Image 1 (cartoon, rainbow, N blue to C red):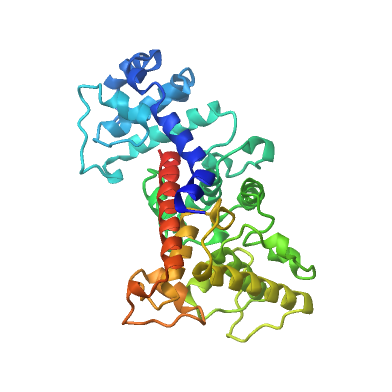
Image 2 (cartoon, one colour; image 1 turned 90 degrees about the horizontal axis):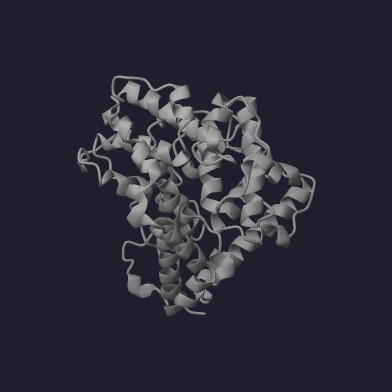
Length: 393
């Protein structure tokens, strides 16, 4: 199956949905009643005056979006969200600026944005990305979550920790996404201990819904259920190489193993259940755990070997997150010793026993199948990024 056929299998429907959503009625958006009804807010000084909940309560979701457009638009922000950007283009006061930065917003504007976002939240039928700050002390139910895309599930799950300043070293796209949120303040001292019991429970609820949305039975963090229960090959279907490696190492982390590998240690230190041993001794696994590790290793090896021997199929990459697809693509290069400039990727591959850095690496070392798989993954990544950017907008 060629690259184009693969794309038609799992990307085309998503791409068409995104295009339809972004183009629908774009030509007349600036003349809608919602747009006309917010004209009076263009004279409101969001930099010095605070908006009130009663003032915002009567506005529709679309009108509230335009208010966000005014707050940011006064500083020249260019929106990815067509509904806002198309309207801004019609306003004589709007001057797009390449120098726009979130730091341009003062405290009053940020407080006004909080008020606008809360007004939007109250009008949502289901919880959406951006709403999690309102659930610090409120338990979420699956019914409240509704249905979402895989990207939305990921954002909502990570948003709970992003609110407390978590940094996303393993996933650059997510880091970039949250860097663009006005409320986000990265904190190098972030710890999962900052999460409330309610937030921890909400994380589990979203993670469970996220797995259902992806159609997978297991995900990193679930191995606590398999300390005395054997896993099966079917439970590992749909997981990426990166996820399989996290699952395997989680078995040891549950016993407090301290990892020499930086990316693994950083990952598990961020988990609330992880308590590192004082030294680097290898923990003793139970018989069932040892068999589970062996099964995961075999699944990893199959995926790893297939990258160089078989054309990638939709079953392998369908539903992968952008960063997982990126890691899979770079694994093809790593098999031939490419030295990575990216610190995280370098740490990641140097932790693999099969990786041997080669300063004489040349792309000509890749086989025809490997080149095909690189191209397939690149196209998938581009489409996944477009879909992710649509959600970000």
